Image 1 (cartoon, one colour):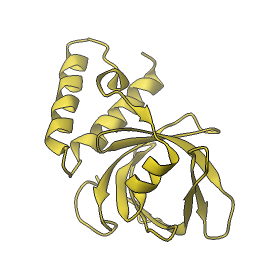
Image 2 (cartoon, rainbow, N blue to C red; image 1 turned 90 degrees about the vertical axis):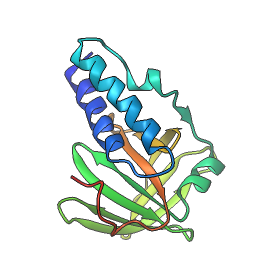
Image 3 (cartoon, rainbow, N blue to C red; image 1 turned 90 degrees about the horizontal axis):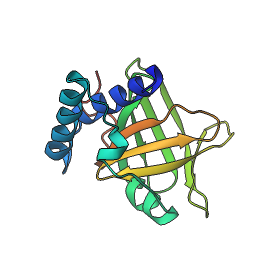
Image 4 (cartoon, rainbow, N blue to C red; image 1 turned 180 degrees about the vertical axis):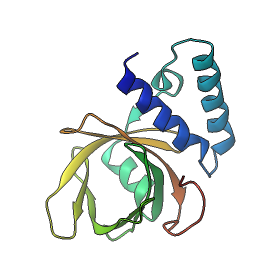
Length: 159
């Protein structure tokens, strides 16, 4: 396992350990199994334990509309709320905030744009409440859990 892959799995593990939601207990057990396996020197892939399926256009819309993603990207905790009208609101642990837009293409790519324009698109994979965005230009996946409603200003889950 490469150092970068290990860092990505650790970021996913940290995000999932802070998860709140319907499957939080189950997710924490999987993460604890991963951490124990890593401590024992075993190489276990998070993707192997949690079969991630690429989401369709409708699945992405149903998952995101009116809900909040809580996760990490390159080690930085973030929250992003996706309103049902296509606007998105982002905040990270450093206090950076951004408003913009989101949409899903007919072929099932999630696309985001800051308010001044310029779309960036991703494929999305999911397993339970956890999701992974994979960009075409950026090989660093973005891991998050989806929680119900607008949790942009809620406490917890952001270290």
